[in-house]
Image (cartoon, rainbow, N blue to C red; front, top):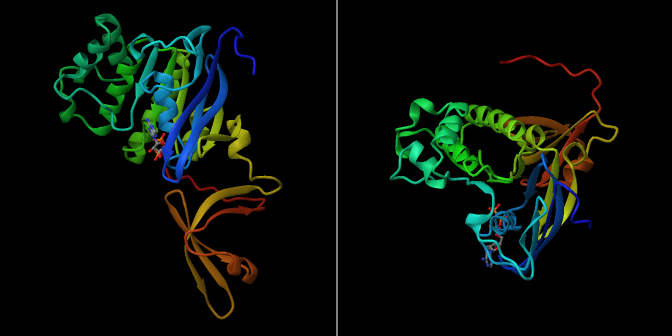
Length: 292
Ligand SMILES: Nc1ncnc2c1ncn2[C@@H]1O[C@H](COP(=O)(O)OP(=O)(O)OP(=O)(O)O)[C@@H](O)[C@H]1O
């Protein structure tokens, strides 16, 4: 893989991990252009968080990391975390509880002007003297984001940043992150389990399984992979299977929705509760009703 093109960021990550199924090797290689928004998906324990921590320099590993033509890590070099231009947003915010909002930002860098600017654009100005325990989840996550931007990062890392938020908070923060990513021309890497979030925010997706990349593509290609000739396709989970005299019904969950669908005898024989399935339809005239 070509690793030194201008504006290219190159990552070749290698680390032995003790996985739940025994030892496994996290071994992934990818490159990103400035301005890319990469989503990383994969089952629990596949190595996603460790990958972010290695890029941030928080874990020792046998890796090669080049960001904006600067070697952060290779066989001979290891740039410590505080020297890497990284912003890290964690799932649980990780704010300093004994510091108010603006102090949390200034701890990273004593640049009052930048801190005031970031508080302004993340709508936190009114809250700058408040302590984290008096803020809502969404507000805390916005502080974490503003703090991550204090370093003017070359790479913004986010580990499931919306998972602790309710759906409306999640949606407004997603919009904010999308705008900030564009405005600051960031290169962002986000771990996420949510296809809709990945679709809205990212332009590239990597899927990891047991430490290896099993898909690396642009977002639309990966997420619309099941469409084929079908018009709609959703990933769903079977919650229950019922059989009446004439028909078989599967109760499925799609995101936060639960639906009943009629299935054939043959399909019913192959399915059991808990299975993940693709439900697709060739409906040509969908009915769409606005609810909000
Ligand atoms: N420093 C380490 N040394 C050895 N093994 C590790 C280390 N850090 C994590 N692991 C193991 O590597 C595996 C992957 O962990 P990781 O947290 O990266 O997974 P993940 O994909 O982020 O999972 P989740 O989606 O549940 O957060 C786990 O089994 C974990 O116990």
